[in-house]
Amino acid sequence: MTANPDAVLELSTSQTQIELFLETGLDVSPASETPCFDASGHEVCAYLIALEASGDISISGFAPATGNDVVWNQSSPSQISLSWVSTADGVTGVHPIGTLTLAYAGSTGSLTLGASSEAVGARVQIVPVLTNDRPDFTLIAELP
Image (cartoon, rainbow, N blue to C red; front, side, top):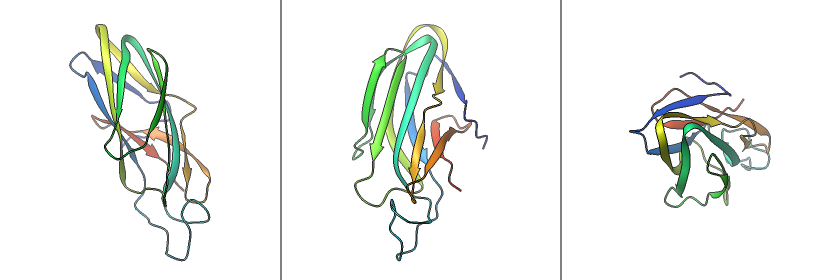
């Protein structure tokens, strides 16, 4: 896995929908701790993810994953922000975010993770959100 805070996903016209996921570590906090307050596990309690399309593509829609209360704001055809706050004890492992729909005016373009993207960890600490080199656009909350 290649983690890169300035990751760019190069796209082609065959990719009209991109599945987005947030991946965390698998360590769950002990029962004596409270995730999203004072815990030591890899739970993610909230996130803000900014994505920017460039080149010949634009963002034409977003559909949150089933059961996921993602709030999104599309400020332009090239920018969207996705935010989520846990209503319970956070999430660990792979957490589906939703499906981003893209439109093409030409043959190529890219999707970039914005520098303002971040998550809130189990101790209510800010952690960076990175990407990896998988075919889907998995976002990684990098936890200590």
